[in-house]
Image 1: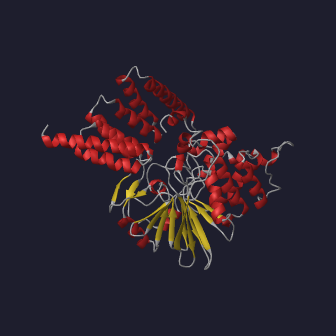
Image 2: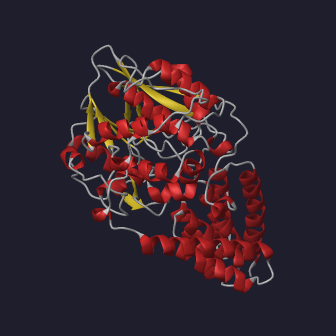
Image 3: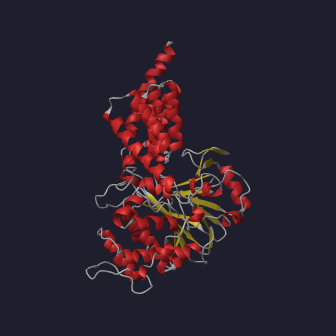
Length: 483
């Protein structure tokens, strides 16, 4: 090793320590930048790659985490942390079988590590459960609708129930206020009314196209919110700042209503109830977390099972498949959860025709709408997440020109200020879950558009306190070990 190499290695070690400090302070993007600097100086240190993989995992960039951990393993095949980090990333992607192989390798390298033994056992259980579920699964085409089997009117409400009640078929603002107040005090809604809200919402969503056109009259305004992720008390704060949804104050919630936050049921029932009260007051788009595979891992399934029942788990899965995939405001603003496509020339008419009544596929237009992210470079690149793709400003510009649109609004990514304007002002990311997972320290944001100009007016807000129920409280046991 020459003198320069020694100096580079020493400097790399100093930078790694700074990166570790940034990581401890939950500044994960900064940590990634610093680990990258250390790697540039000394790319043969497996620790730097494994540490950067861990930081990517914290930012939900699981594809990048797998790549970095794989590089750590290539450098040092006996470095157990490399397999450990890759296994954790595979797990977060729902790839249990790949995760199992990595944890088996950790156990081989460190046979006496009790932590490795525990995680391997949990992973084996998860894979066994998955194999069992696959064995008994019914093909989509043969499935009977769970919704059709539910008659909520036949369910009795016990005399001692003192929560919110729907009189007849109409959801009113008085009911909503009582329900939201009950939720604030951690009381549950009676299952009769929960069924009624979810089933009525299903009927409305099923009738909508996959791409919904929204008209805002001159002088009127329209609000777009990003991911809420089960942060019910922050949702209430949005309404406190900006008013309840109504015909005069309409909203679009742009996907990822549930998972991670432990008040996801309260969020989804509140949004669905507003849809029942006044369909034009609130529009709802599907996010990548409105899916069985995500809900199984990130908490919504466990929460619904705990607060309601298994039947509701199936019902929500069915209703999530009815959510539209994108919206266009006044033929000018395209709003979607994730982003754009791996091919040019996609027309709005093609999006409108997507058969969305299914679990999200792993490729194709529907997948990309839900999963893709913008990138600073031009062109297209692989996704940091391992699903979808990254697309540059030129891709955004061409899509807008080809469809005679002005702006793309999307969500899907935590931003420090709650929003970010990219791609020469033609793309805005909006994220409405402040201090995401109680650890990111970010602000939340929403966008108000006023017709006819539809100039985006961005409002930011900070997190508010919530009861002491931790994020991921209902998540897959195994994943909680890594969060």
